[in-house]
Length: 52
Length: 477
Image (cartoon, rainbow over all chains, first blue to last red; front, side):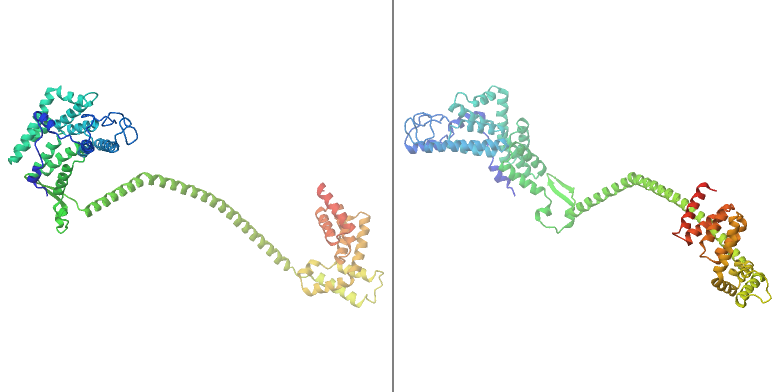
């Protein structure tokens, strides 16, 4: 049986367009590659794209 | 794929050919990211957008620079109505790869159309407002607001889900199900949607089925569920009734088929059978006519033969009734007396004994003897056995004398008696036949010739008689 109140808590407000910039800046973009490089003690050549 | 340290394109080796850096783990991470991207692509292909979003997030965790994965993630967000999230991903994507990036097109598509951007923003605001109404327990307002949101953006999955949740809260199962089905059309495998749908379906099932009991038989016949303030009661049909109905329909189908067969096929068959019977009757009638005619012919023949038999019987009786004349009996007795006692003493005639006997024998009728008293016939046969040859020779000499002078009519009786008294006398029979032929008594001649052939076979007389018969038959004389 679905508990309406509990289910309602799972719904969160959507990001509005005005909030998009802040959301982008705040997004945690750290990935496994960054962690690997940190573990190896080396900085990546590219802060941006790793071309494939 | 290039080295993270020097930027040289990596080979199949686990180290960089440019700087010698160990790139084994680095290559594995990128490969895992790409593999997850491929998996997400497959999921998105079957509209499993929630699954695709989840996998793409993992892909980006392995490699944040996977542009394809990030762009696809933005597309999945946009398809489910999360326009701002989509924009965020595309912006990041464009930031990572500014040139030759399709994310640039996506962003331009939204940003160049101000109306569309306003609509998106307005939709999001309304959704957030509806969510706020929900928190304030103003469900009716929330429903109204969400309906507006969905009228602007029908693909907004979260709005559909929230509306379905509100309907579920209001026990509007049908409406909730409709919204959830729309969600499924957009995002086929969304976990929240499926969970809500399962709940709605469970609530829409008949109460007894949910409980798994069949105690209340009457409840089997109806389907009852609550939809808002209304209780929907649909007539249900029990399994037995459906089976009975199916069998009944099959029975009606068979009956109709039989009726059509009877009305269309049977008359033709009957007509053909009648025609065959008529032909058989005609053939049998013809055979009966033929047999009837044959029976009539046989009956007529039988009648004719019976009449003939009666006539012959009467004739035979008539013949048998002929009494033995006194002349025949007297002459026969005289013959016997002459043979036994000899000639009378006062007889001075010059004729011989055999001539006397022959004279008396001429007065004996053989027919009368045959049909008369058997004793006289026995006596006659005894006399012939003793003196038959002498009598035959005497008659033959007399008859042959007439034959030689061509007095055939006179010769015939003597020759006839000669053969009668002495059946071994073939010459008498041969000359008798010739005499008949010469006297134009052809039938008797043929009969006499036939007797010659029969009684004296393999003799010269038989061969000559055969030749004469052939000639008589050819000439018809």
